[in-house]
Image (cartoon, rainbow, N blue to C red):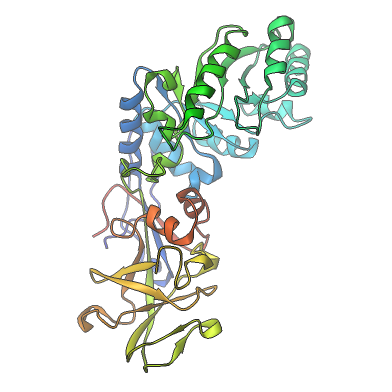
Amino acid sequence: MKAYERGEVAHDQIIFAPAPSDTELAGAILTVDLKLLQDNWKKLADECAPAECAATVKGDAYGLGIEPCVRALWAAGCRSFFVALPAEGESVRRVLDEATVYVLDGLFSGQAAYYEEHGLTPCLNSLQEIEEWAKHCSAQQRRLSAALHIDTGINRLGLSPADVEKLGETPALLAPFKLALILSHLACGDDPNAEMNAMQRKRFDALRALLPSAPASLANSPGSFLGAAFACDMIRPGVALYGGNPFAARPNPMSPVVRLYAPVLQVRDVAAGSSVGYGATWQAKRDSKIAVVGIGYRDGYLRSLSYPASDGPAQVMIGGHYCPVVGRVSMDMITVDITDVPPEFIRRGAMAEIMGDNVTVDELARWAGTIPYEILTGLGSRYTRLYSSLHPK
């Protein structure tokens, strides 16, 4: 694996330098391929054209690092970014002066001045938020931007149909600010055949017709592939940008952005009938060789990946060979069966592929009984993180 250090990413280019030797002191190493991140964004932009392709970078860009990711996305042509929290919006603003930054969690009570100071556009989710933002704009004598979030059936954040009807009847409530976007969120977009998709789209079209004209956004990652009726004026993909499969039961059309490697700490001989790990949950059926690998649930390798896992066992790859996880996942280590791996590939210090081209984030999610969103956003803080435009060798 050819490693590259945390590179500064300019708006028009990506610059890297050889990694320092201290990466050899790392436990697990996580690489983020910013070129493939850009490729995924361009694929989605082509898919939805002529609609705008924004980028959802909440959760520290789904665990990959918000600052390098937004720089790379800006260099690829992305101009609008969605975060969950105002503090995340400030992180984007620190590195991108001109981007439009939407805050999905809305206007936090009493914090309108913070949004104005950092140039953040709140996605207003209630009449109370609308009233507070309008009052702030009037007091500052500035028509600041805001988006309106309509709930069309997912029943989380958002204006109810009754709220939208009230806004349609009293347009003065919206007059003090600029309406930059009207958005909603699909509940079943990962299932292209779900009847709820069409129901939400029709409801969205009907409700936004009651409001002043403004660009519209309905599609998340899976919605981006549902056609022009769902693309509206803007899509806002998230997990698909980072290589996760936007569909529940279709091949993944996106490129893997994240690769995760962890070192073999020790190789052990285990006699037939002996157990491995906490609780003695796995016993060797034959004389076996076990590799102890330096990654655990503290690093985001979920405990649910313990043997036998869901639809498992979970696998890692060492020397081009798949090796099943045996025993329980510990805080700092896992154990894998390497009995059938040729000995020339097994040594202390060898790197096991935990996630990448051969062990995908979608497979990890399936074995863990979860979704790729949780795998990516749960990536730990102890990794050496390397940002590279090259595939690791």
